[in-house]
Length: 219
Image (cartoon, rainbow, N blue to C red):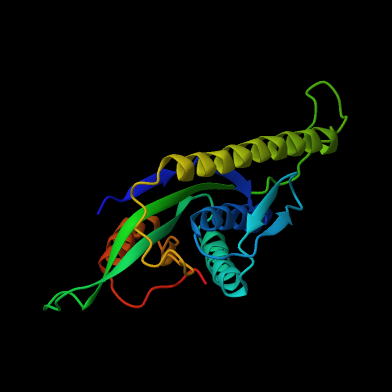
């Protein structure tokens, strides 16, 4: 099966922005790949002048929130490290069991990689001029820097959302056929976050691609 991959633009965020930005991206991807009967719900971001749409499903929201909390916990334990989250859609196929595989097989048909660079909060400090004892107040310049960084992140987030919309509109041939056009279609998915170390993330992804079992449904 052809697996399409989308690498989203890297987002540079501060710790307190992770939750809202990640909600926006994950829910946007899931909404545009949900072919069933959904109950759209508009969400206005508190930190940015951006509105996105959720599917209006409590179970889905809960599962996404759990993964966001896990990712935030990883970031707190691994400061100053770039990271990546993968949202994968797959089909479930039955196959003959063997020594190394189970009866259920996951066939991935689309993967979204969300790339992160979490900035650390700079410590406030004062500096003295070489020619005077005047202490420079960094407050005003720090505020300007924060506003500029926030504006840049908002622009990058908008770009990522447009990238998602463009991808789902252009990449359609790989989407699995709908077994029952009159019914509600839920695509199985999984959200993978980094493990205890960056070096093992790739291996964890390979392991997950080899794992089998009951899918998590978009329901």
